[in-house]
Image 1 (cartoon, rainbow, N blue to C red):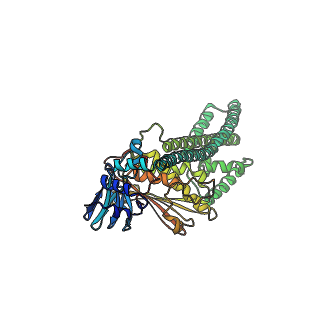
Image 2: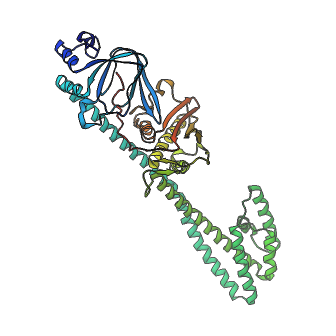
Length: 487
């Protein structure tokens, strides 16, 4: 269609241009009419810069397999398309959104190369400033993102150190006590061996010792009331059989699963005069077994924590693989347990029937960390007491991971900005404003999923939806967060 300098001069983008400049625009550009339908598609080579003269445009971004509308306007002069053409080959020149029209619409269309040449010739200072702003913002975002990862790593390291310290200290204490008990058991065995006891009696004691050790390994779990009743029963039996301070021995025997029937078998197997010594020897045996169980539990706990740390960091694993999200969630919750604190009750509502999904697990762990950290902060802002629910479910052909907290909620006036880079509601020094931005890019741009939020006071839910199958998951793009989709 004819390009009239007077008409394009009425557009706010060009209103300050000279007649010569308007003439050049009409020479190098064109006016084009589009019927209802698409104008260009996200990801295609960015070949043109569009300025709407009249009509209605809709801009959309690709989220998973869906096009999500981000803007709809009929304002004359709005622009979209190859807005980064002035950067040349410094950035990929592709459309960052899709544009369609809902009624016959006229655009002034300028080829991307002409737009880049005009920007550099007519506005050299502005072009340099925009270039500096673009790359400066990216570098700042990258640096602060790295700082946030380091801060998170430091927090996780502190929590992991605390979690490792408890079982390690327990193992050290149990080892020292075990050394003492083994020494006393050797002494007691020497006393028995030096006595005038037939070989058969000593063999019977050793047999009882072996069976006692086996019984410790199978000790039942008793309620406090049941344990108290059994302790009283054992203490009475020991007193009746002349065992001094039987009340000291009774709790150990109860913990080992021994009862009066077992003690009757011991009494029947030895003479009455050596029964106190036999009971003392068996007590050391039981204490030794219990201490070894404690050491085993402590070292198993340490091993479990180390495995969780490896699971969280995904060391020695492929960056992209098929994973069970529940394993990732459990390792993240364990790593953050020190930060979550005793005031936050964690509820796991997992659908264990869900299949594994293709993903970048280390980066999903980063998403879980950010969302859990935000939930704990929200609960802490209301006094530190609350509930965090982590739920998984299937929604059609996608897997849902939901984080629900009982914090104060997200005010409606800021809800639309929470995924913007550098936006934070935390006090100065406590947040960089990149956690949700990074999470959104990991989930949406890298995994072709979606991240959304629903919030009312006392019930805030961040919902991550991941494809159960992915035809091809690309590399983490350098998503531009400094450019607007449309002016």
